[in-house]
Length: 418
Image (cartoon, rainbow, N blue to C red; front, side):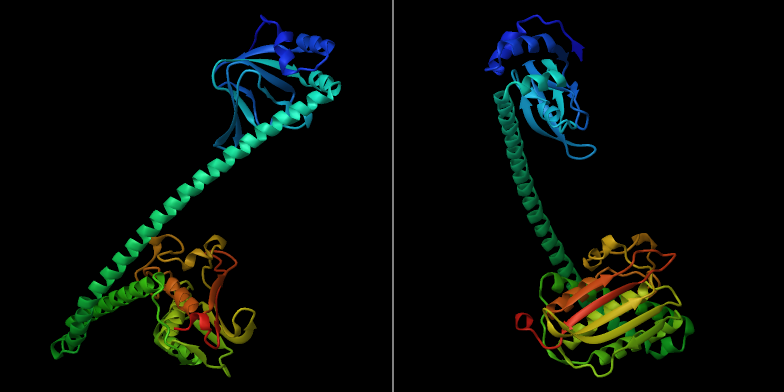
């Protein structure tokens, strides 16, 4: 920025811009203004700085920008010859609300705050014109903001539609692939089970060990494919609910029987309460068993050896579901970060770094496709229920634990009955 000697009639330049201003005030203003020259991209005034001067563009152009964040700005207005700026900060005696830069070599008249306020105090009509000018600039800024929001909304809508198409394509591919692979895998599993029982294998310890390894891996792969197919049905809202009376205690006794060996090996303690005197649910027993199976597996997987899993069941009256059964599965595991509490139910989402997961489905932080909670949510919601998680936070050192809640209506709701 540089100060430039006045080489033109300042008073005559100001007269049409400040029409109605008395001659003595024009004379005073012409004496007080300073002409300054700014090169392209030079900052004339910066957002957040005190407002000490008012500027008038003599020649050239300026851009007015509003900070969006630490690294980006939004252009809100462009001003050319005769344009005022900086008057709002002076009038309200506050900080600049925007940054102004020269977009080309630009000459400005600079009026100090005291002179500007003195002239304005003697000419109320001039104050009204400044207000009208500022209002027009704000309206222009609002219009640009609305147009920018509309463009952003259109872009987001287009991006969302593309993502939905890609997600459907991916889901279809996963479903078809899992279905096609499960058929030969089922045959492989059957043949492996037959070979395991063959006398040649039974009589040879080394062969028996090898066959056990093949059988275990095949069974695990079969479970993975089944999980993928279940998840694809959830994602495509293809779950069919065939209801019959279901006993929650029977479901959990069966699940804990399945996991008895794992619970014993890892020295986990499982406590249950509230299972006596519960009413029957109107639900699909196989799907509900699968959903709770995944929730118990999740508690086992993320609880260190020697930890505790507590299953509590109670009846209550829900404002939306009416008479309901609530199941709470609480663990003393690594917990869930607040920002992950909703994400954990999304398909393929995993807590922590994937590289750290082991291969065992029931080992501490064991492996898996990351579909169990997605399937559980789909099953619960298909029954007209709710599922959510609560946790103080995530810490592998302190193990704050987490609790998964499931609330199911005791009787089928008409809106979700299949």
